[in-house]
Structure formats: structure tokens, C-alpha cells
Image (cartoon, rainbow, N blue to C red; front, top):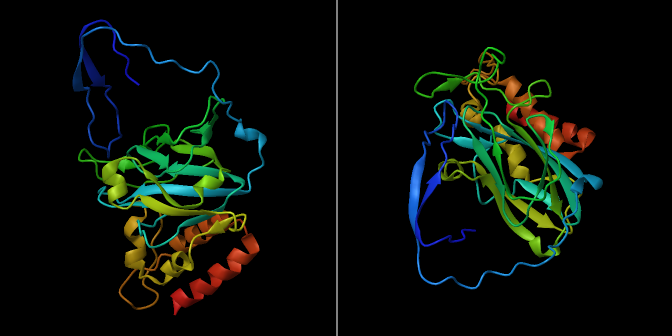
Length: 295
């Protein structure tokens, strides 16, 4: 909201933002010159009392999920949980009436901006530190991970922004991680929506997913089975979106000309268990798909 002051000209500027060694430069920039003139208009009357928002930390989450925002070492392709955008698929299914806890991780050397359509969420933790309750929002920044003397295991980047060795936030090094409580409570949200990085170049190049919200969904479900079937992709295709150096590659055990990435499989199984919240059932399903991939 912009409120005109006394008559005159005012400069509307952005601040300089450090997007990280792999990010684009964002210096201070003049966006517009605002001209205020004429007689003063009737001031907008605001309500004396705004609707009270619930502190969602009083709720018990139906489900806990993890979303890793990553990109290729040269920054050309962007992914969420190592999957690029496919608008024909549902990546996450949630039940209306539930509050869920989402951990959103930046696994790259440039900032990302998590945004959810159709509803707002409450940030409860950022970079491992508790966040006091100030309200709900639909967008939050994910800080970049770049190596320094104190954190040599983060992304290592050259002067051109090409990065290797990127890792996701951990309990020991939570920088780049945000934990939010998402209230899927209002029946009007029923249907499909998206969550994505709010940087246009990133979402347009793969960093966006589809979510389905329904009163009939299970308490904690993943998306369509086709997400599991991605294990049948070749190791080269599956490696498209993993952060460079994130997994250790193994020799070509199957004679198909590609390195076999068993660590990628272990990562997939862990994420799948976390997403579905059904460890025993998910392990059996995942092992069955792994057997198909090994053939």
C-alpha cells in the first residue's frame, strides 16, 4: 500500500539484495517516480479491529513433509525434491481440515522464495531458530548456502557462479531451511493449486509443483504413483536435478553405459517415507519399485 504524502515527487527504490554466488545481481534500482499533486482525498478508513489469526503452534500437525529446492550446478534447471514441473501430475495430496508442518530447504548457492497459492502459512522456524508468532504469510525467503571457513561443506562456487558440492540443510547446519505450518482448513480451497519458487526464471524452469486439496484425501499422502515410477528413469535422467556433488556416484554395475547412483535411491526412499508418513508401507512400495529399476 502506497500513501501519498505532501505534493511533490518521490523516488520508489528497491534495496540491494545479495542473491548468493550463483544468483543474479540485484543492485539498488529506481522503480518509479511518484508524483503527488492535487487536493487531499478522503483517507481510507480501516477497521478498528482486524480478524484474529490463530497461532497454529497450538494445533497438532496431521503430517510432516520436506521439500528440497535445488538446481543444477550451472543454474539452468530447477527442481523440488529432484523433480521438475509436470502440470499433468499431482505431487502432493492433502486433506482439508488438517494443519501440516512443512520443512522447505534451499539446497543451492542462490536465494529461492517459497510461495503457496490459495492460502497462507505460519513460519515457525528459520535457519534453525524459532520465529515468534506475528501472523500468516504466503511467501518466505530461503537463504542461499555458500561455503565459508566455518561451513566448508556448503556450495563451492567459482567466479562465474558455477557451483559444486551443494548440500541441503541439516539439523547440524540448518542454514537455508524454513519450517512452516500450513492450515488446510478453509473448504473453499478444495481443488488443485501450486507451490513454487516466486522467482520467475526458477519456476518457469522447473521449480513448481501441483498440490491437490480434498476432504477425501488421506491424512498424509504423496502424489500420483507416477512420481514413484521415476525410479525407472535412466540414472542420467534421474541425475538432472540433483545438486552437483550431492550424491556419490557408483560404477556402471548394469552395463548400460551409465553410472549407477545408489545414494540417489537412498535419498528418494528417505524423502518418500517422510512425505507419506507411512514408514512400513512406503518401504515395501519403494523396495518393489527399486527392484523394477534394477532389472
